[in-house]
Amino acid sequence: MLETYCIGLNEYWKSLKKAGFADDIALCLLLEPLTYPATILPAPNWLPQLPDSIPYDDDDED
Image 1 (tube, helix red, strand yellow):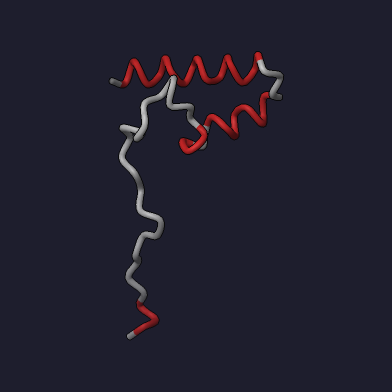
Image 2 (cartoon, rainbow, N blue to C red):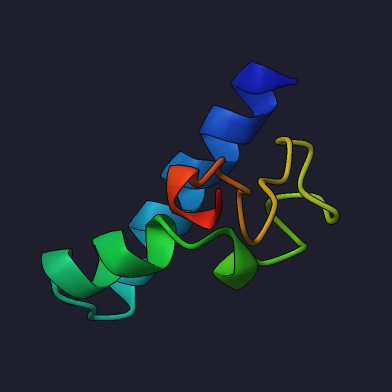
């Protein structure tokens, strides 16, 4: 699965560059899993999803 995922990322990168995206913009898109096309990278993403907010113990509440 990891190899397939990496191949998909590589194909996505090459497609973004071929479409004319600058390196910095293409990298921003590549780093955001929500932009991945379902035709290259399967949806839902097989990588574990992080929670939106991570609860932290706060000593100030005591």
